[in-house]
Length: 391
Image (tube, rainbow, N blue to C red; front, side, top):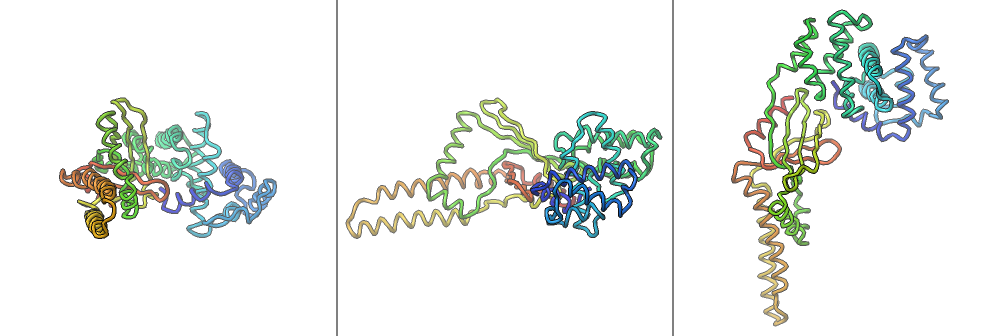
């Protein structure tokens, strides 16, 4: 299972300008290691081979620098610290992403090699398979489960218990493979493998929370600017019209997988017809923050802005009357728009949900947009967040 470093190293490599060459070089090296080619595991010959391959691609040592160390150093002599180990695993995952299996035979061979490499080398990509392949990872997970099953049945002599244990840990740790791990747990007999698989599958599932996808809470400055420009009223009015006239909805559900990842699913409905469906998984290691909004969040901000609006109207009106200039009616209309936007936004976004015992829950990944589920029962939100914190 990846630590926090592995996903960050993988993301850093994804932005590297020479990632295609680094992934190709890593793919060739791990292929030699898995095949036990002559000299592949000899340190001197390995360094010479990597240097030759890098030169052939015009890849200099400076080109291979990353925030987690130098990729050529890791490929030549292996990692020397925790950051370099994360880089080695991320390189192996990038090699998988750039050279994915394309046939059932590729999946079978790839699963075999992944498990062997994870058990015997520093290039363990099993914790980053979902990062590398995304929704296309299912066939490879099936092949890994089959490797574990065949080892347990004694029909896969090329892999030992170490590789099978690596496969069991990978299956039970990945959210996309949790169902396969649960199925495998009732098929195998090896006590060690069974212990690994049942440790995950026996955990009580976390009840999902349901509600409606909404925009994440705004900060004080954004709220004030939107209110003063009148955009807040326009946006809220558009939402009311869309819901009332077009039945626009975004029902969603958030669950915590057996691996501790957050899964967010929602649909976009218009006039009762599903326009789009979304299914987003935020790995536990990539989740920066998960929290629910407190009751009547921002009440002091709204009260202060409304007081400013009222004070502006009264103060400017008095001033205009004092100098006997034009009527302050136009100013009053503008400030009424600001006040109306604030009142509607506070009513729909804060007061009504809080009064009904509901709240918004925000999930913020380390990179990417925040996801927010509104109209969630407070007790269920607290239960899910507590279980997520335990994991």
